[in-house]
Length: 382
Image (cartoon, rainbow, N blue to C red; front, top):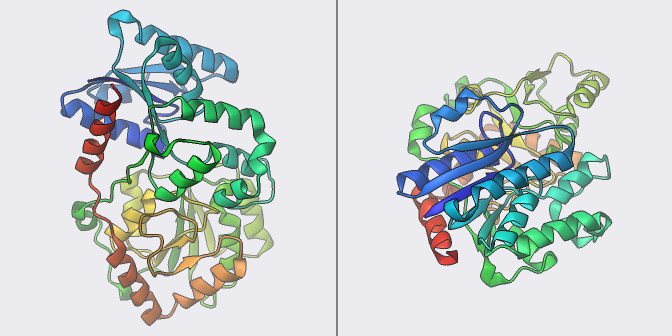
């Protein structure tokens, strides 16, 4: 099949869609399909593009968003003419790249599928400094109606797709309800769980030799709820522990100020964003990784930690395929609850039991499974 992948970001930029686009593109090519990828980019000359087996078309990202959308539309229009018409277009973005891509597909009569990750309107709401809440609460309380133009545009993109792919059943059912998506045109394809090679390459250090360190790694944005983690960490009974915050983002200044206010300067440190390999090497000796987000939709980091036998304390609204299993989770709305769970895990017996409960939950979803599932969908819509 001839497939165009439309994504908002791509390597060397960091982010789930960038990593997924590279991996699925390479695997589709290896399976005998022809792939072209279209993406926004900070610059148009990027040596990293030579590392991929498929051609990459980059649209330079500018401050004027309408200009970005128009130029993205034009590049896709050029790539989908009669002589080079693809069998389908795969949208890994449902707004900045998704809207122009869906418009091209509708005008050209080309079938497209959309992969949904995150919650665009909800994340915009949080970035405006509004009272934080989970993704589910955002829709159940009807707050999405305050963003009517965005809601309508996203619904237009999703309902025009031949198939909408989610990585969790919870989000699929949520969006079926609020965006009026027919169940026959939605599907769940789970994220890949790291294999045993990852665990072998990042074998954890024995408990007695681990550093007294708690780690958060991710973008420093409101959705990640890092301020609640800092406040909870201030109540940790064992003051020999340090909290390491790895990442970059607009909340860094506010978080540093909070650390100063709480008098935690000597116990909280900030490190810049790191590559996956660097991050593994960093966390393999830590005591605990924490994901305190208001909602984190099937976070790949959780799989990585469990595969490497590194305990990871995660938010209760996480949409993992094993989210209903019996292991310790935190309430993102309660600093008291986060602090209580952190202190519980200081006990070696509680800690070992927690680590064992996570190991039992590890799924076995491989890239081969993901590729086969995508090929079925692509074959079905063409």
